[in-house]
Length: 306
Image (cartoon, rainbow, N blue to C red):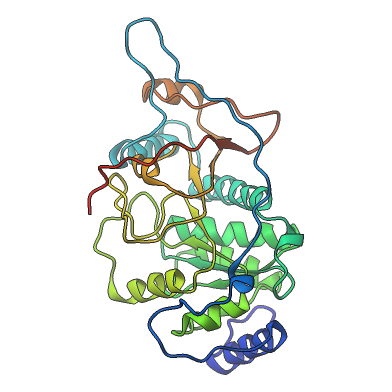
């Protein structure tokens, strides 16, 4: 398995082995997963510490913002590359590491009892997918048991390197995602959603729509990186993925106002103060040397478009 993607037969063998150890396998072809037993989908979140956050008022009546628009997020990214000389792989490593650390804060290894802490990392073709690959590698180093599903790969050297790094650490890659959600639910504890990031503009293409549908119907807890996949970056999506945990990178996007999950983290501790000031960002201070910060949960906006 080392250094190779799993073939269809190898994928089935891996999944079958996990299903047998997990207990009985449900083979219903129903489009709903209402029959998923509670004990197979319940993963205990770690207790979150209390967090205090206040917007800064500079005396001119204006309050700095925490959330950024899609255009602002793209502008910040571009300036990090052009004005501050960051490289893509450098930011990706910092972002992916912060996501892995956030995951450990939300889910202890002891709480993921199925198949030795098995976690499914679903990666897309862009930078968000790269963050997912980095996250998977660090989770492996942290003692978790990640498996990657990476359906649309690119030949860019950066992503080839990230893939090889995971394979060299004996992280399996699925060649397909079972269409029956129950099979996914039986094999894993949590799904890490790294399909699309802040550059996404809908609609979701059919090959990814089916992946998102399987993720949702599995009824497993979903841990989304930066933006829940398929969401409008500013308007959200009430009928789409509803993650249990969200990790916003650099700064929360406007759609994070519609996040109705249980824990929200901020990661990517690399925004220079001058750049934050230029975009009027009110980024709260990170504690100590932590690469992440937990944000307080807010009441979900009621005007989320349907």
